[in-house]
Image 1 (spheres, rainbow, N blue to C red):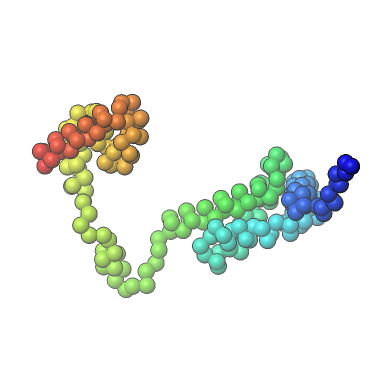
Image 2 (cartoon, rainbow, N blue to C red):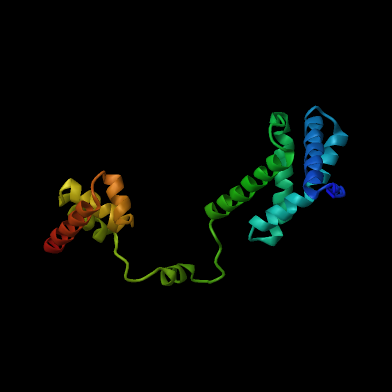
Length: 196
């Protein structure tokens, strides 16, 4: 007797399908907000506020800046909502704005001078500098020594010893065999050792 295959019971709607439907709703709210619907603006912000906070908190090292960065994200998004065309989901569009807001905050922080709580900050800065590194004069001498090498040897030496490329990648960049690169580097080292 041949038994008929039974159909598996239908599973409830998958979480991914629910997420897709939610993303479509959020994108529709963003497009309606672009058209001037104030209720759609509230729904758009309300639907994504928690996601933006979590994403910014994940990217940002300063937990006290999370709220400010989230607010900055929504200000940027609402200011440029007229350019949103719905080609991607509003969620991904907003999270890319959040990422740029965090990156911009890092850039601003790096450009700002930092305050020191040490009374003699110049001495503290000098002590924090690494010791024993080559100075400007050593760099000029090195550039002069490198300039005295033949072009092929200089290229191989710079690619492998200064840029840190493996010999195979340096050979590919120089369009020559690996053995030739090794030979050029060895000869460049010998020449530089003689000049020193």
